[in-house]
Length: 332
Image (cartoon, rainbow, N blue to C red; front, side, top):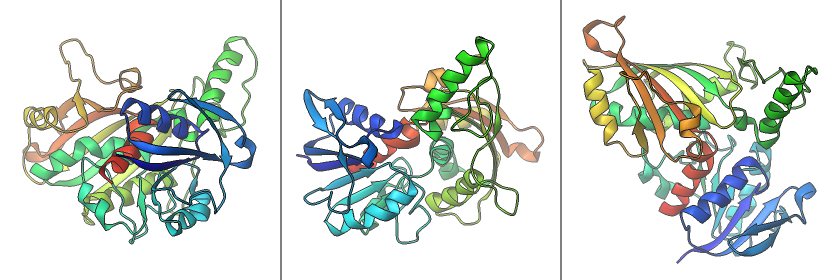
């Protein structure tokens, strides 16, 4: 028997994905409250045979709510999550607001579900690139500890929200019609182009997305000494992120061993067809729950077969965001 659920940021890309996953997985709820900013208040959303009216999120929105699924951005999470907790709800927050708070569990259910019960009202959902990268790395790390990871991401427009996806579509139309592309969301043209991830650069030259991947992976793996470096790039793809991952292991490991581990790993689909040169693509992962893994090969630059290269693709809106949060809610 489910409880009462609130979805904060329901009209956004992740909010909409929350609804479709709640429906698909038959997530149990007794009542559902749809919350968003004032400009979406009053919107009607049909869901599971009923029509819901979107309400403006306020500090009073959470009376009687058991689980609040938040995807309204970090500033709104900071503003409203404490009110939800105070009202007795457990918040599963998809923003960056609480991820690195030592009091808040940062959870990927395939990796550290035991952390959920340590919550003090808030559980954080990791960054989409972090989740998609580490779901296949964790089962390998358990059998042969990873000493160092080098990750390059190829990130979809959806990571910047619904309006960014529309911008990609519009720009493609404009360019094909011989018009200059209209830029509102991204700092650069996204159609037929790629650019360094549009998050803030730190003084060390790394952007926020790269720094998140480093810090969040260490926290989720509970392994402060793992060496990680990342380069995050935005590419003209709608909603599935890809990542090229180079791993250095403690002991020798072969591509065959990696394949065997990943074949039985939760949340992972191996798509590694060398014969037909067929490996994971964003269109394979779109709309799917699993992270797809391929290009599994020895890194021949490392001695003693301690290096492996992987290529992964995962749906940024699903496992990268909404699905992970709902898996956490199911465990709650």
